[in-house]
Amino acid sequence: KAGVTQTPRYLIKTRGQQVTLSCSPISGHRSVSWYQQTPGQGLQFLFEYFSETQRNKGNFPGRFSGRQFSNSRSEMNVSTLELGDSALYLCASSLAPGSRSTLGWVGEQFFGPGTRLTVL
Amino acid sequence: EDKVVQSPLSLVVHEGDTVTLNCSYEVTNFRSLLWYKQEKKAPTFLFMLTSSGIEKKSGRLSSILDKKELSSILNITATQTGDSAIYLCAVEPGTYKYIFGTGTRLKVLA
Image (cartoon, rainbow over all chains, first blue to last red; front, side, top):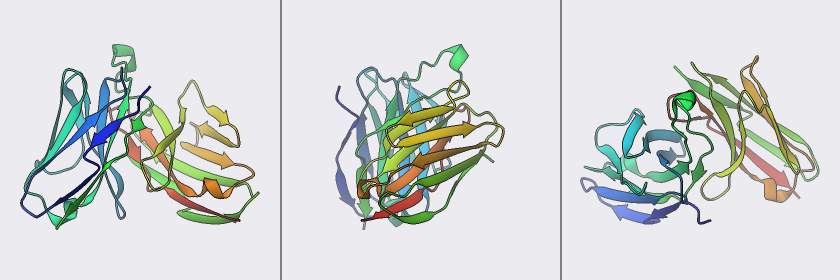
């Protein structure tokens, strides 16, 4: 079974530009989460999507947004890039049953290779 | 505020040693705890521990969840240089997200 894929793997942008990152989850996985990883802050949660609905989001400014499509693929967008947005952006997918008995349940998450974004 | 704390921050051992990595958490509604290994790329899933599965083992790696102490340990026996990595602990507080600790950087010397 193919793993989580992310494109592009590397990006170089300048301040003020915007960027769109893509994530294709493992086949059958319906939950997609996004994280920002920096040396100083570690892995910081951005948002989680399940069946095209954002179920939670982290403490990031509104410049960070995302969406999920009906095939569970997800994109995240960062507008008006700042130098501090330089980071490794990781996507993770999970089965996430999402039933009432598993409220709040994400389950085992598997990560993609990440997109390394450099903002100049 | 929910938080996850890992210790030690870094560790240097020699091949063959046994190491114990710690993860403690303070969350409002614990659902699960995950351990990951991260080398120069994305984190690789190791274990998931829940209220119904508090002990896991795979080869030289094992992990235990202590719900009373709100903590977990990851043991690695007979360490090898290939075990050198950052080990991450993440906790799901029942809000559709995981909170990660800052990780323990393990270096195994030959």
